[in-house]
Amino acid sequence: MIVATVVAPSLAGSAFPRPAAAFLRTRLLSPGDALPGSAPRQASGCRVARGGGARRPQISFAAGGGAVGDAFVVEGTTNVKFSRELMVPGSTEPLIVLGTGYRDKFFVKVYAAAFYVDYSIGVDTEQWRKKVGIETFDASTVFDSIFKAPVVKSLSITLVRDVDGKTFVKALDDVIARQIKKPTAEEESSLSTFRNIFLGRNLKQGTSIYLTWSEPSVMLVSISTNQDASQVDAEIKSASVNYALYDGFFGSSPVSPTLRSSTAQLLEALLTK
Image (cartoon, rainbow, N blue to C red; front, side, top):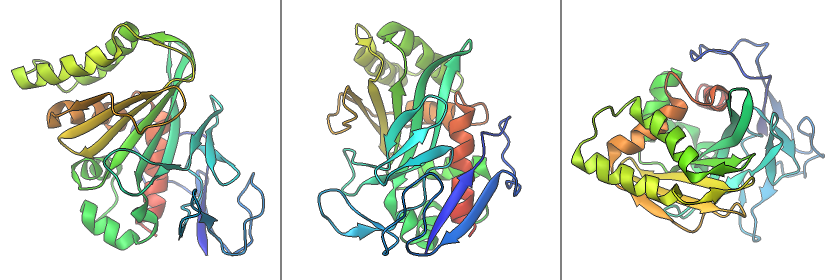
């Protein structure tokens, strides 16, 4: 059996108590059952990994995203497709998508985003919970624990409009400034490296940006026009800068409430089952 999680549109606000039944419906699917909006599943209840590798359990489709076959989920507001699995530098196994959302500015949609963690969360949830150090579910505590834990995680951002590099850097600087108001010399060096990746670039609609935390003190940045995260454009070695960016998406005032909300709901469904 596999677990299918169906999530209604995003919840308002930044607090995430245990979702009521009206917002989160979880049911077990027997082999051959179909997920809502998808084709019937194979009898095994799993899918074959790309490249003909071993079968891995599928964690349902990401909260906040509709199913598109076996390979993708869709962020519903922007219609951006994200791969269910993502290979990133620093990980020998694919990461699996947990949530999707979008960012808008002055009512203009700027990008869609998806959050990935290592796929072992769907293989041995109890062991994953222990590795991350989760005893009870509280969204804020869980997100902090995931950042500090020895598990690879990645944020995938896909632009839905053209953005110049300077504007993109300014938006990320505003996020970082919430946590780092007076950067140390080390932090300023990391911030300079991060800014220089984007300055002078014209980021076209469809460009993907990957922020991959291989460990708390190391963030790998990849920029791609074909949703390929394999090339590393920069490596940021500052735990405080890396956390400031992470907290901007998963802290108490996220820049994309829909991403945090959908990820929190699916994490709760997985970690409290």
